[in-house]
Amino acid sequence: MAFTTTARRARAPRANRPSRSALGGPVQGWLYALPTALFVVALFLIPLVLVLQMSGSDWPLLRGNMGWNFPQNYADAVDLRLFWDSIWFTLKYTIITTVLLIGLGLGLALLVQESSAWKGFLRTSFLIPSALGLASASLLFYVLYSPFAGPFADLMQTWGFTFLGTPEGALWSTVFLIVWRYAGFYMLLMLVGLQGIPDDVFEAARIDGASRWQTFRHITVPLLRPTFALTIVLCVTGSLLAFDQFYILTKGGPDNSTMTIVQLIYNVAFQGRNDLGIAAALSVIVLLALIVINVVQLRAFRKPEEA
Image 1 (spheres, helix red, strand yellow):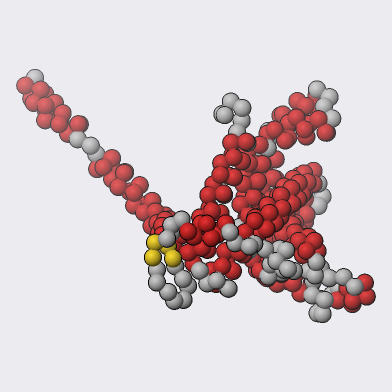
Image 2 (spheres, helix red, strand yellow; image 1 turned 90 degrees about the vertical axis):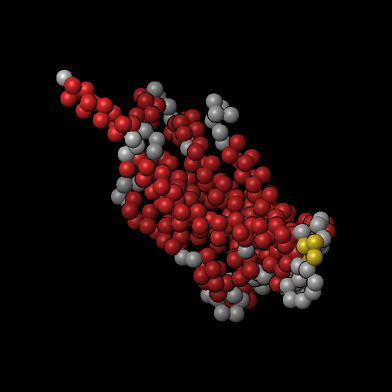
């Protein structure tokens, strides 16, 4: 009896000690997260701090004295000749591409979901353009739109029109490129959302006598709310930050009619003014606008019980 009591007393402190695996759990978690944390700090936080510093300083690209001049850069940024024109064009382009990509992506997703014989072929065909880089696709379409070397050169010379020669033509030619490039990607996102809807819901709707339109309107669209939120945030963010396609196809022309806000930042920093301070101020303005727009979008797509 005495031996048993002594053994229990000897084992009791060991039972209260944390195990080696319990001590190693938090440490291992921090070690796993360390590479990602370093990546975020090096490629996001440090550049963000540098941009904030530049936006409040007189920071010429080549020569000059650097000094604190907040908020002069922001005032100069708003007073730029093309500031409001570039914002209006960027918003216009964003609305057009968002409506077309979301609508076409949903339509293609419904098509490949319903089709059985050609399902694999259609999915692959629609998704192939997404494998091409945006810069490469822009160069490809630049050749297609060329009035000298493109396949439509003779037709354009005969009819006297150019794809990129007018403001509206340049806009819609670029929109066509973006729709061709990204429609398959948004189709894939929509298809994942559609496949996440239980078949029992559609079966119950058919039993109740709901038509295809009623099923789509009252079941498919409401249950795709999270997918719509994701795709619209991605599409709006990508469109507001558009640069490659316009830089390659139009260089902001003709007559600065296709100047996006990001291309204006590039021009202020590296062409003409060579002023990194004003360019950084424009970047901060765009960042704040993106945060506000994305917050509004996510709040708009919340479920009523989550609001």
